[in-house]
Length: 344
Image (cartoon, rainbow, N blue to C red):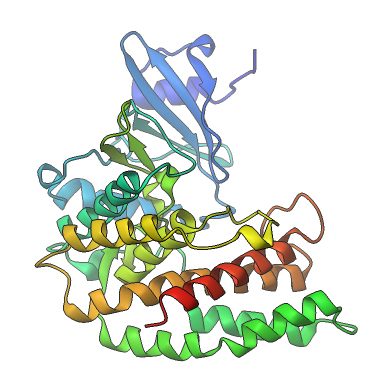
């Protein structure tokens, strides 16, 4: 059995009497180390916070406190499992160099892939409902958790700087990808257009399908999770991330180039789900930006993969040296498919 040296600190901080046989490693998340704690009929999720990714956890605490104090939870048809307060009123607990938090456990199913358009509709609807429910919160109170996280201009600048620092001649595969991403700089210009035009909203900013919990019958969303990236943003960020991860026929690590395409039925379901939830709330220009969002989020992901490859794979975990190059090609293929189908 693993030894959980932090357990006595957690028990003291939260007034608990948990034992090591009540704790088990939980989930397959890539950011935080996560455990499930079972206490009689209750279950809790304990996380060891990853400060290498989120370097200023206090900004997340501040944002979560705003939600706890002011968010209209009753307006949602699902749960937002935010951290529980310890006995001192804090949302995080320090143990040595580690930071821990405890959240309610929500019973249900986390999907890694969407199986049908109906689930795509529910996913998009849920994320849009979050921004809708947060519409009256004071935006200026929210902290930026990861500065310039989805700033396409900055990501393109990082790419060109990494390219300038690359030593030696580019191989054919690398040159092909570099040329493609440079030629699509028009998406950077369009980014400037939209951010000057659109209102800022409270957005989730990490709209992956596994950041939802579905009911056991998979007929409804019972929780939106992974709430660390909640901060001010644009609705095309959230919709675009759904398009990139749900509507693509292959995952981002696939090298089946000829199989990478857009599942039109899932795409349309995402669009219908997001726009139906935002009806009467989203402005017309926000609705007009959604198709751009899919292309923008695909492009920015490809840029980040390619930039990391140029830098020597220092950010994204890779299983082989060329994986970030393959990921960038994967996103290139998806972007080509999106541009063919949704050129507007």
